Image (cartoon, rainbow, N blue to C red):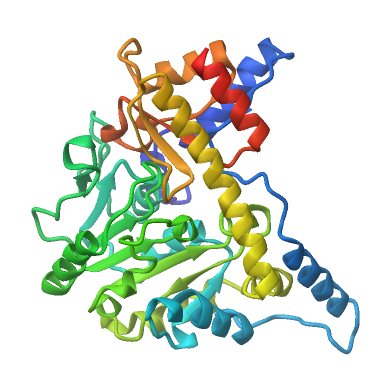
Length: 400
């Protein structure tokens, strides 16, 4: 019998969002006329910016002409996009990057999962709790998470609790670790770290020769001046951090698939060259069409249009926060983030019970906090990515 990767057998039977969809489908089958408002999965509802659409149409026209046809592109991404990223996303924040340190891919989810290829199976990994499930699951599949314990945690992972007792600011690891996953603005809690709070982790990584895997997928939503837009704003971070960015929420690219990862040349162990080698082996590059679309984000009109969409979602977040305040529900996030993290009412024994209540009584779908880790039990995530009309309707139902 062929030998398989038995780490797949260690994963729980259902991915969080698959379980959510399963429950929605079951309820919808039993109640076909129910008007369900989905505020769970962070998918966008605003159309792609017109500047992006025009650029992608132009790219399609190029592919329709033998004289301008593009075949395989560079696995690391086209130079035109990498240069725009360095100029527009980092230089304004005082960060100088070589375009060769920027790798365009098909989204932050893929890259945060695939980055584990660069590291030994025996490295020690730290994650915040609650945590975006992909960070954990990708390390389970790589064989470095250990065994699943009765409390839902993994025996070899180091957990950094984030809760209202520590203002959702994780403490530094109490034992030596090699990799530290940080996501800020945070998914799922919607909270942020200040420069001083992030500097503590950079200083720790430099002192202990650790690598920070910094997911900045929601950077565009930052409105607070004390919150850094990139980890590289912190002195020394280029020597200890890899940063992931996404166009999914920035410009509505969830169905287009494009993002990028920054792997500085100052990192130890030739990680920049290793990631380039990994991509040339396992990836043929993001499509020319999607990269042309992404490049249009950096035009003057593209910048205005993207900002309008971001402000639209932040207005939704404000609507959600106002409704929760009105009914006296404690909540966090939603200021520099499209996510609101609320404390479930005491009447519900756990966050899945509150999920079932909202689905069956209010026809509102959110995400149970426990799906993101044990520290998420007793919390619930709402997304501001719906339409304005749906968001207002959902909050009217909630208030009633």
